[in-house]
Length: 231
Ligand SMILES: Nc1ncnc2c1ncn2[C@@H]1O[C@H](COP(=O)(O)OP(=O)(O)O)[C@@H](O)[C@H]1O
Ligand SMILES: [Mg+2]
Image (cartoon, rainbow, N blue to C red; front, side, top):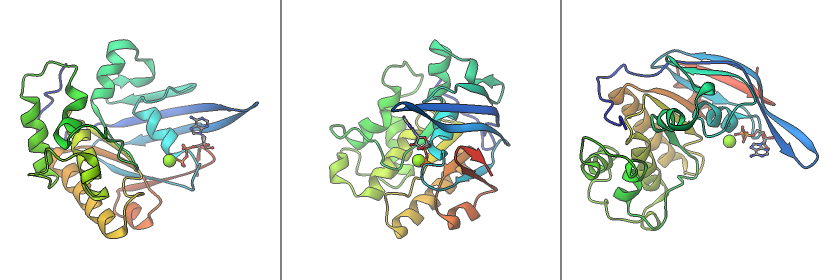
């Protein structure tokens, strides 16, 4: 795998979404999670995705991160047509995306350092995985807590581990789905400051779903969605 990435700041990915549709089956009906969404995010931009619960914020992030597949439409990230990928090329694309979830999604039986390096485990790398994981933990303020398991860490610390894990593949695009939604406001503020610092240092594009207007205000642009549509 090419997890090495590297390169200076300003390496963020540009995103172009065109006519994206995602339907979910629900009982005997269909829910439209994304309803012809078109969107352009310039390389290196910070974009907030806002809208009420159930409006389709997570769906949009999952589609761009290729966690879910679109039914119609097209996603391009830099020169890669994501919606046309399959197999190894799709797996490689996914590895190049950092994803931060509201509920952290750490593996409870693994230490912090093992959670961070877990995405790299199946791959041969030209660098030492443990060293990279340790250095990322230091970068998110968790030096000395490498061996701690998630249950021994506070919510804010768990999200820091999850952020370090999201960065382990040197992503050019970081997708954050309500990253402060499970944290008190002071801890949430710390996490946001951390995300902003990392975005600057690593030169990533940041696309973040959030309910918080204070957070959206810090972004270059806000995309509001309602019922799967951009408003
Ligand atoms: N896996 C799924 N199966 C069925 N319906 C889903 C699924 N994921 C999302 N939905 C539905 O799609 C709509 C958008 O959901 P979501 O993207 O999670 O919204 P948000 O993140 O803005 O709260 C909602 O109506 C939700 O219930
Ligand atoms: Mg959501």
